[in-house]
Every structure is written in structure tokens, then in C-alpha cells.
Length: 461
Ligand SMILES: Cc1cc2nc3c(=O)[nH]c(=O)nc-3n(C[C@H](O)[C@H](O)[C@H](O)COP(=O)(O)OP(=O)(O)OC[C@H]3O[C@@H](n4cnc5c(N)ncnc54)[C@H](O)[C@@H]3O)c2cc1C
Image (tube, rainbow, N blue to C red):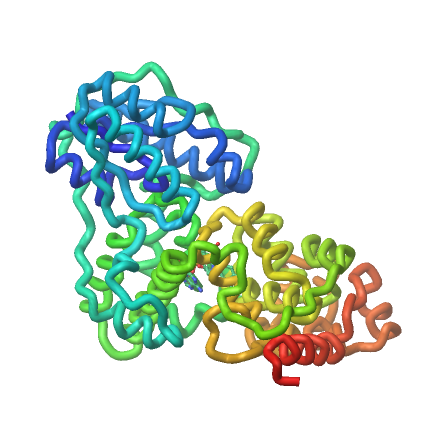
């Protein structure tokens, strides 16, 4: 018998470790309900993930097997299970976050003391970070090396006769039914991606930043696959190879659009690469500054940002989308992160922590890498990047459809007044939308202060 320990991979299809275990012998699939680890996830993501584990359990039952569930610390639970099932090896998939790697080391050590082997596979990413250089000056150089590494296709679901016919009385606790979330699990992920392959991917590059389209047809403008990828409900090889099939089947402009989607997936890979070589990515600036960045202690501003009440319509729409849906489109995601770290000069770690609590698609590497990039403490080759929340709105939400969707106080206001809101006089604002806040920081002063503080930190002043 072999054990397969499910971690952030609640799926039977395209699961590298599970496929390896099935090639080696009869597999007992195992899930360890670890309350400490689950407690580190935001409520929404924890529920979304546990619902996917429930679907996984149902799938094993359809295949005549079962997901064997234990609770507690994985090293202890897995030693007991290896003994119970007389397992030779415990298979699992590699993680890149330091705390998870420590956990797997404890598992390896405890099992080895008991004479049981472990076998770890690359599953979360297409290219193992260890195969690439330690660091790259920019994304395109990372992309060049990453692209040159051959990528394998998805792993098949193991045949039913490779799975042990176990019946386990235990099950994962029913996750909180009150939280409203997208449908969970592999099947739901597959359906969403099929829809995107049919109707979104061949126009992806042209529409991905169009916020009106993101409101009208949210799963066509962009894939919205991130919650499924972040919880491991679907495998990355499956997405890569399906997108590749569409790429081969189309030509010209459509091909360019599909190519952009595949290119975007390389950002995710770069964030894992960054985390792999910088385990402190969530706590320390990636870039070295000769002087400290003079972050502001600005609790009131931070609270207004969290609530979506900054008086900057695109920022507020983005934050309210986050608070309502646990998801935020990439464009406003960058704008709200830039606004917090630049116009308000609040430390990026505070914003990242709030995102961790709220996002369904929270991914330790992408979230902290994304915050550092936007805060200009990360891998961006531009020294100080500051998104202007007004011109971002006029460029990407020119009809204010996205803003109106999430900021009802502005629904009746004329479009140009919404876009220019932070530049209007108090009197003009009162006349147009008296219930919506005035800007909590002056647009130009916020910009200039950020520029000055970052230049001082960089030793340029
Ligand atoms: C401050 C900040 C925080 C972020 N936090 C997260 C996070 O916690 N989890 C997360 O998955 N993404 C994060 N991102 C990246 C990006 O915003 C989301 O991946 C994207 O919005 C997800 O929506 P989608 O699946 O519809 O994207 P699509 O536009 O359909 O993109 C396709 C896929 O490409 C990948 N991708 C695209 N851009 C990036 C990027 N910059 N970094 C990593 N992967 C990328 C994702 O896997 C995404 O699903 C963050 C970005 C910023 C600026």
C-alpha cells in the first residue's frame, strides 16, 4: 500500500503526487484536518477549500474508494496511518512556503524514524523553481528561461483499481453553509475554464483590462480561475495544456490573445520562484533600501481604505468588490495596493494581511509578491511606480460601469463627475453625490509625498 497525503491539491485529476503513488502501488488517499493550519486562512478561503475537499471525498467514493480523514498534526496522523495501512511510502506534493516546508520536514523525519519512506513531487507549478537561476532582473528575463523549460501535460486521474477499497467512517466537518461563494471543487473549476476557453480566451488580451466588461461578463473578460488555482482544485498543467490546444487551433489576433493568457500564468510561476529563493517574502522588503521607508502610522486612513471610503471612486469600488466577493479584478487590485502604499504611505504588509483575510484566491506567493511589486519594494524594474487612481479610472473604466456597480452612492452621478471626483471642489461634490466621501488625501500632495519618501529611502535626495 502507498499513502497519498492530500494538501493544497483536492483533486484526483492532474495531481502529480497522486499519479506517482498510483504508478507505484495501491493508494490510500488521506487528508489530515489540521485546525492550526486551516486557522491561518481567511474564512472565505477556508470554506471554499473545505468544500473542494468534500467534493474530493465524493469523487473517491464514486471510484469505490474513500478519502481517509484524520485530524491533528500531520506528522503524528501520518505515522499512525502508515502503520494502520502497512504503507511503504507516503507520497505528497511539494510546497514552497517556509512554514509548509517545515511541516513536510517534520513529516519526513517522523515517518523515516518509523521506517516509512516519503516521495515528494512538483505539482503547484509548471517549472520547478530550483531548475532556474536564483534571481532575474525583470520578468521578461525570467520568462525567457522559464519558457525554454519543456512542460509536461496533465496527469490522468488514477484508475479505480489503483485506489484501495477503503471505507472511512470519518469525514471533514461540514464547512459553514452561510458563506456565499462560487461553486467549489474540480468539476466547478473545469466548467468555469471550459466557459473561458469557449468565450473568453481568444479575446483575453483585448478585454482583460476593460472594467465594463468585467462587470457585464466577469468570467469572460478574465478567467477568474485564481480561486481554483489558489486552493488547488484544478491543476496548472491542465490549464496550460488546454490553453495550448486553443493556441494551436486559432491564428492571428486570436492567437495573440491566447498567448497573453499563457504569458500571465508565468507571473504566477515567477512569484513561486521568488518565494522559493526568498522565504521571507511576506515579511521583508525584497529590494534593499539604503534608508528606511518612512511609512505612516495612519490607522484612520487604513480603516477608510479597508471599508472602501477613501473618496477615490476606483479605489473604493475595488475594495468593495473585495469585501463583497473575496475577489478583486487585477486592475483595481493594483490600483488599491498602489493607493495604500503610495498615496497613503501605509506599509504594504498591512495591506497584504487584509487581502489574506478577505481573498478566496489568496496565494501566499502571488499576494506577497504582488504587494511588493506594487509597493516598489519588489521585483519591478521601475524605481518608484505610482498608479494615478484618476487616470486609471478614465482609462479602464471610462463609462464608470465598474464604479457604479460597487459604489451605489455614485450610481446617479454623471460619468465625468465620477471619474474626476477627487479633483472637484467640495461644493461640486456636495451637489453631485452628498453621501459619498470627499478624498481623504489630496491627489497631488499624496503623489508628491510618496515620490519624496521613496527617493529618500533610495538615497536619491
Ligand atoms: C497586490 C496584489 C495582490 C495579489 N494577490 C494575489 C493572490 O493572492 N492570489 C492570486 O492568485 N493572484 C494574486 N494577484 C495577481 C492577480 O491580480 C490575480 O492572479 C488575478 O487578478 C486573478 O484573476 P483571474 O484568475 O481572473 O486572472 P486572469 O487575468 O484570468 O489571469 C490568469 C492567471 O494568471 C495568473 N496571474 C496573472 N497575473 C498574476 C500576477 N501578477 N501574479 C501572480 N499570478 C498572476 C493567475 O494565476 C491568474 O489566474 C495579486 C496581484 C496584486 C497586484
